[in-house]
Image 1: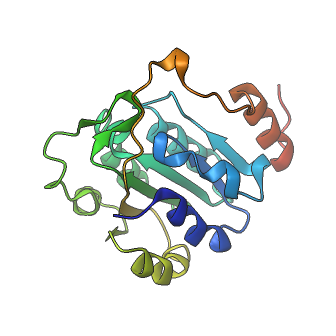
Image 2 (image 1 turned 135 degrees about the vertical axis):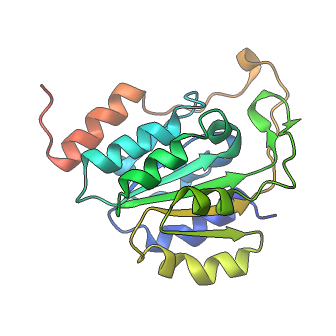
Image 3 (image 1 turned 120 degrees about the vertical axis):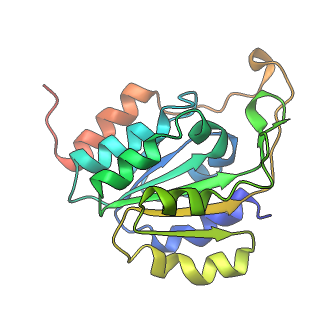
Length: 196
């Protein structure tokens, strides 16, 4: 398993101008690594909907590379979206799955059958153009640049170390950040899209 921070550090040099969407506990380190925050969207708290939202952005912005760092718990809540994405074939969509084998945000409950699920194979069977599985940082680091040069949709499952949260929600440290409306406004401004 890989630390999610290390995944993002390996990915960052290849990001370019891509829109990057994160979710889940494993997605948190990205805010400290990104050098293009106006092209970042955090969908924490949208469990089960992040994949669909990122897919919608890829369809609506076909000239922009859209990269989602999804969580397996969130994806499992809407697994049928894999077939929908594969059917529409968005060439600009790169779907990274940070798989920590548990629901880390809600206390670390194990994802059922987590060690047996091959998410890359699921995406490939659904019809993604290509799929990968990584559990070794060096293998990921060597491959990520080439993967991001492929035509999508591409699926990349990465086994990451869980960062389990056990404190009640109200007692957890809150990091100041942009609100969701502010993220959307920043992205629109960055892309030159007028708000109606």
